[in-house]
Image 1 (cartoon, rainbow, N blue to C red):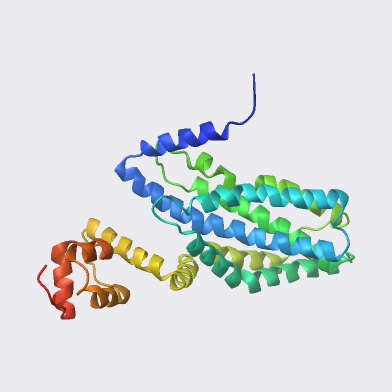
Image 2: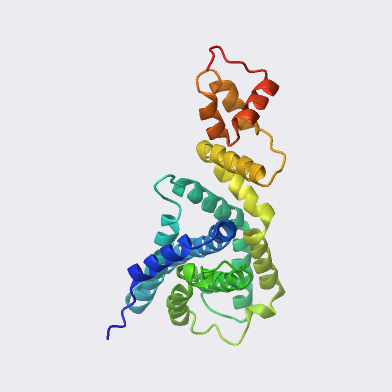
Length: 306
């Protein structure tokens, strides 16, 4: 009997499960999925950034060969399994949000740079206090291990806190994002390069703990996630308009007062005379009656009767 993992069969099952999700649970699924791609996707991408950085440092030190080279390549290839699936989630027959998502991840990376630098410097000071040779290189290697390990811990915490959404099992659906295989490969790199880094625990160092706490805040805080989202949307105006439309549709569905954003108001001013009310309402995300109210507020009139 074959024990080979059948990915296609699993994917088919997940699609079937998703189709069984009720309207009530579909909203939960979409919300959790959005949080997953921003929080876990962000944490994983940060870890990946510093994997690549550390490998360059290893190459500069002349150690990128034989077993170390193989372990580095294993770490990258295992990460790419997640990355490919993650980017596939950003594209479907109707929309392609890959550029928007990459801009979001770039913003997260850029925002975290000074804090990750402080974390690595804190690790280096621990190594120096313990008289560890080549502490500069080893601080890069240990930093990567800690970032990947943190991403795994964050994934577990995220899944544990997910609401029920039968029949979908979030732990299985998002399993490729749990970077444990990548962590195992990088653990081999760390053990080969940092053989003498024993006898101390980074958790005992207050600077290391504080640095990682700050990194976590930047990865999971709604304030910081929104900042990165706004930066990404500012680089993708079409996605910005789509987000405004979805927000208006959500407000309408939940019987909340909804108003035009500045971008939507500008769009109506520019297109009110050249598009039908039906087209405008669909693009903005409101009904025809509400569109007429918006047009009246903006002092817009049709040059030709529709």
